Image 1 (cartoon, one colour):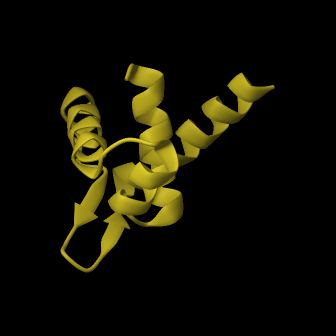
Image 2 (spheres, rainbow, N blue to C red):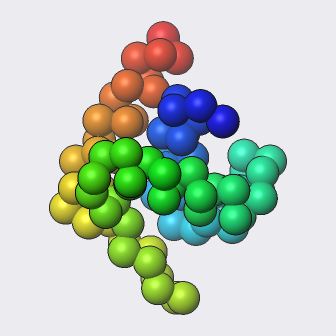
Length: 78
């Protein structure tokens, strides 16, 4: 996975509110999705998601980044 794939994984996790569901949709393992999100957060220097065993929520930075990702991915599809 490249950087674009990381963005797609992040968007899918947010949309589906689940690492497991995103992994299933993308055809990759849950642990790989988790690693991609962690690498993305490390590279950005910001936490994007708050994770608990029962809930997944966006941080303030995550909200902003999600909106940008959706815009960028949408433009690329056009």
